[in-house]
Image (cartoon, rainbow, N blue to C red; front, side):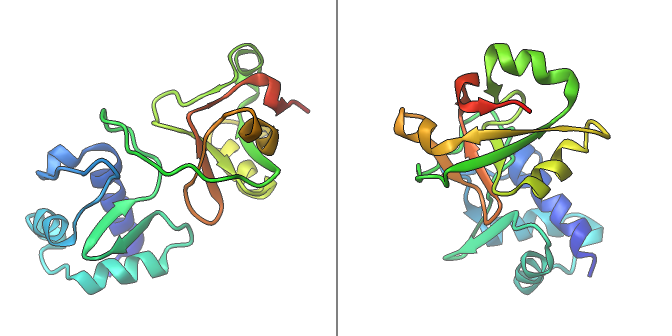
Length: 179
């Protein structure tokens, strides 16, 4: 089984294009595992896909992108669908990190971190993950330090994406340390 390829397909279906697969996500991004399987099985590549394959895909992933609970599956973060996926607010660690291209720094200083084409701003628990993310758009990205506890105390909502990823609606520049 090609679990990385399957993970990308499931991510696309659940994060960006559920309607292309005939799926309707609930307000928290969940869909029935059976509905997802039925949709994927229509493609010859995934015709033999079973529930166990979805569990193995999740276990094999180096990044926790999906979860299955009570016969429902969802992507944990990264959504670009038009209806906002609701998350439960959680108290963040003292600091979080965001890797970004140098060309965006002036805009971030002026406007803060905005979700852009995603539903939430993605933040990392550690600098290494932020560096990996930042390198997608810049060979030498800037790692921003987010004063998450201070922002939380001042009313900014944070949401846990997975073990290494946190989400926020936006982060004002006053909570960002630029280095």
